[in-house]
Length: 86
Image (cartoon, rainbow, N blue to C red; front, side):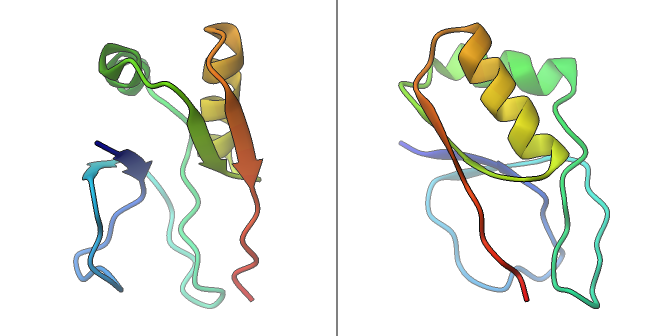
């Protein structure tokens, strides 16, 4: 099963697979992105309780960097990917 920790919207642009865990973000409609603000302690606990075998993180934003830092701290394989929204 896949868990996705991501900013969410009232009207998602597409149907998703897996379980979406909402995180705080700030929408920037002019460029079509909503960067996450990082990982609160309770979100980090949810991630670790899930016992992931790897992380794939959108980067660069605060949420992506927090995910990569958490993975590194706990020895979980990870990779960062960059998606140009423009």
